[in-house]
Length: 427
Image (cartoon, rainbow, N blue to C red; front, side):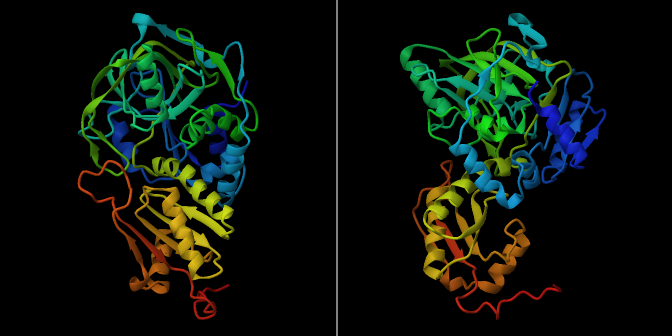
């Protein structure tokens, strides 16, 4: 049996990074999640009253969690992740897995038997937020794996939000042109390797499950679905099987997004479910949009892209931090001169179009501590040397034009002034 989510949780428990709650009402879960949205502690509700499932959140809520998954220090996460992207490992098919211990098919399917929560007061309804969606290109058969918000719209229907440039939207459009449905499987309660793989920014055509295998250090074991022609991780907690009819949209939203505001209602694709399978006493997983866990998931692949691009330019980069909001970032450098600092900052903007504010600091500044970054800004930078770029590409959902300019700031020590800027510390 391959390592699954529960094995990872046992590891967290032994490292004192897991808090367990024995019993709670589903109505109390949103407040608990909100209160712990910036907590680095993983929280496992063992029993949700009235449900077979427990509820888990903050699965990847700190860089220490990523270091555990990759088997490295927090400063080695970027090269470790990039190594996995460069060395994918193909999954293997096995006969069966624990994810199909319990099966509900056809009219037996009932999403309301899962502890799906409504995260915010004005959310349209409960949302599945940690579901890994698997689908295949209708022409090539290449698999795409991604995470999208999923609105519960009935016992057997979900609404899914697809960004116009997402790979799954490309698959949906292609299927529509061919007059086909898109068969989809959604896994919930995944090992972190699958979650990280699903949010990876890779080229269309690369199977993200191969990245999961690289992170695991072995091929990911898959098993066939029971009602659709698809394969899913055999040791996941829950699987939803179904299809998207490219001609069938439904009202979806509003929903509280990663910036802390509501995305308005829109017409988005519907997913019609044909089966739910799960382990005995499954663990249901959620991710609150805008939480520390969410911001780190959004940041990782973008940070790695900046890290890689700087290395390829011969720039001595020590680290990149794009959390807690990927609209701002800080990079740690050992620059040759001030021209190289500007070049590094401009490369960061090119790699991450969402970035609005980017700061460069020296390695003696803790880029994961924004108080330290602000100290460097206050003591090592001059406002008149900040550079503003106007009328640029930024975050796409921008009706009020607040994401169209960018600011870069050099907060590194002036050349030859190291002694004057030496930090006053005991040792």
